[in-house]
Image (cartoon, rainbow, N blue to C red):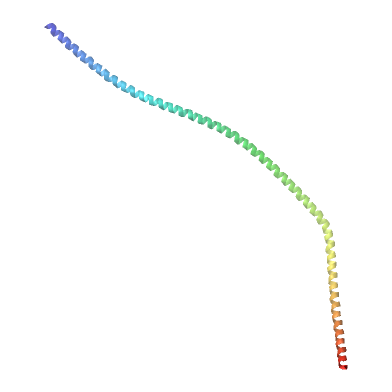
Length: 178
């Protein structure tokens, strides 16, 4: 029985060892489950991070494309501004030249007009003086003729009154005689 006791003891010992191994296996399985759970969580996080990385990469390329486009537009705008400034400068120069020519022509025209007016005034002044003298002479002559005309008119009126008075007197004498 000793053998059977020894075997039972050994079986019990082996069973304890087996229980202990089962506990350890169960602990390892639990740890493995926790690790698998962590691995799943890490996989989900990794997947989310990969998705986020993909989105950020897409945004990076979109931003790069936009920046490249803006750089291109800026360069074109600068070229356009330079061309417009050159054209504006050319137009200003042309405008200044035209204004200078207009001013020169205006000054030339004014000088020509003043010279023409001076020549006319010079010729007209002599003619005007002669005409004014003649006008004054004619006005004086007109006044003298007017005075003579009035004097003649007055003397004719006096003569006509005398003749009428004489006629009246002679008619009055003739009326009495009849």
